[in-house]
Each structure stands twice: as C-alpha cells, then as structure tokens.
Amino acid sequence: MGKKIRVGALVSGGGTNLQAIIDARRRGAIDADLVFVGSDNPGAYGLERAEQHGIPTFRVDYPAVMRAFRQGLEEARLPEDFRLDDLRAKQTIFPPSVDPQKVDAFLTTRTVAEALLLKAMQPFPFDLLVLAGFMRNLTPYFIDRVNPDRAHPRIMNIHPALLPAFPGTDGYGDTFRYGCKVGGCTVHFVDYGEDSGPIIGQRAFAIHEEDTLETVRRRGLEQEWQLYPECIQLFAEGRLKTVRMRHEQPGGRVFERTVVKVLPNRR
Ligand code: GRF
Image (cartoon, rainbow, N blue to C red; front, side, top):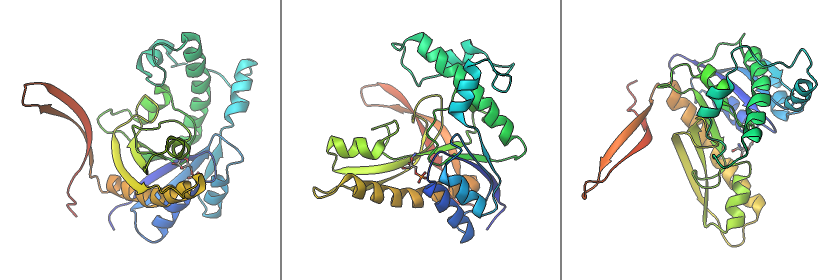
C-alpha cells in the first residue's frame, strides 16, 4: 500500500456505495481515508454509516436552505463571488431551449446551498470528492471551486446506467423500462453537465426476460460496489489521465474525443 489519499464523500440516501468504499478501505483494497461525509438530506442513512465508523459528517438541508433564501434570511445568502453570467455560460445541464428564468433560478438557489456545502467541507482538506448516491446536480460554482486545476478533475460520480444512455435520477428504471438486454453502471469525472463527464470505468450485466426492476437494480448495485473502489484506487495510484484524442478517418474526416487513460501501475 502506498501513501493514502484523502477522500470526501457526498451522499443523499442509503449509502451502500459509501459502505462499499468503507469496506474496501478496511480490507486494505484502497489507499484512501474517508475524511468527511456530507449530505443534502439530513435523514440520509449514509450519514449514520459514516458516524458508525467515526467519519466526520455534516448536513446542508437543501430544501430548508432554498426556503430560507426565498425568505431573504441571513443564513442563506448568495456568496460574494457568485457570477450568474459565468455560470450560465458554463452550465450544460439545461439545453438552450429551456426557459432562462428556470435556469437562473436553479443556478442561484443551488449556489446558495453549495456555498454552505463548501464551507462545511473547508475544515477537511481532501484529494478526491466522491458523489456516492448524491442526487443533486452541481453547478459550475461548486465544481470550479473544487477543481481549480481543470486538467486534473477531482470529483467522481457513480451512475446506474451505461452512460451516455439514461442520464438522470433513475438509470436502472429507465434501462429496464426501455427493454434493454444489457444494463450497467458508470464511474465518471463530473463536468458542467448532467452525468456527462469523462468516463473512468463501466461495468455491464445481462438483463433476462424474467428479471424485475428489483433484480436488475440489485445486480447493478453489486457491480457498483466493485467498480467504485476500483476507480478510487486508480485515482489514488495517480493512474487516471484525462486526454483529448484526435482521430483521422480514411476519408480525411477528423474527430476528437475525451478519454480517461488508465496509466500503467508504476509501483
Ligand atoms: C446508486 O445506484 C448510484 O449509482 C446512484 O444512486 C444509487 C445510490 O445508492 N447515483 P447508495 O445510496 O450508494 O446505496
């Protein structure tokens, strides 16, 4: 085992992925220490899991914060360095067809909550932030402050589908309802879009006719619990490098794609 990286996690719910990371840490499978677990949902069971393992926790109650902001209360204010134009220009969660007022309301209220998240995270320096069932889209305000160096993204997410298929909150449900023969999960770096960042790792599994949404979800989660610690360990070993690759096709057509390269293990 090499030097340990410091990992912070954000959860919204049950936290089985968080548990898989805690377990991987305990059996020495990842060179990582969990330095905090935060949540937008004060009742998230993931927070209890963290507390059972002595990991510091904090809560930023998103609905309560957004309510307080609308009421103009002191504790929920926009940070001084909030620049709506900059966030509008960067965000790719909403396509241009969406009502700009809706986009502005989203960016504004979310930033208020994210500023509190950043404040709560401040006492805990970290190398990597993992979203482990964190069910809120992040704005560029938060992302830029966690990723000051754009060449080295350090927010990871796990998504319950083979991206770019079925982004959003119900990947297994969408996969199952579509009638897919294969489902999967994806770990990716977070960018300014919804579930759209560079892909680090994916796992696929077969879906059979006799399957139910529950069996599909269960099979998927079992893959997630293996995949997420593996990707965290690649990050800990300094083996993930996000690159733009240029490809020239026989007819001369050129295209580019973003790839997360997995470098050889030099240890
Ligand atoms: C997982 O399927 C994850 O991919 C998705 O939300 C679910 C959360 O599960 N983002 P848990 O809270 O880790 O149990």
